[in-house]
Length: 82
Image (cartoon, rainbow, N blue to C red; front, side):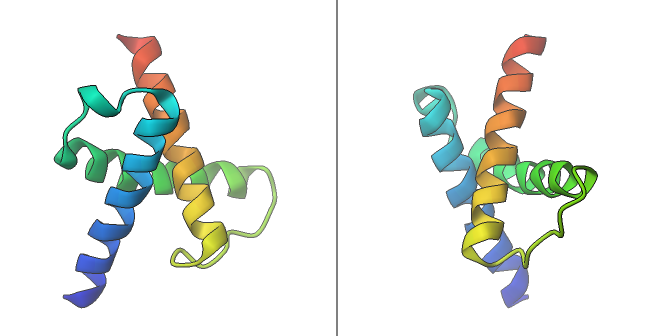
């Protein structure tokens, strides 16, 4: 149960920072930040894995940077679709 809560907090932070980087912070609410952050972590880890680099531990500084990067990529992709 505590891991689930940690992942929600981790996803919220990654999604929030990504929304600030992309300038979408005022258009997104907290739930959207959590969802974008969690999916963004998977996108970022997938991009790192496809590039042939080892995926770091999710709850680490590098893992956080990868989650933010994946979240930014996801927000940009969603903007292109709309």
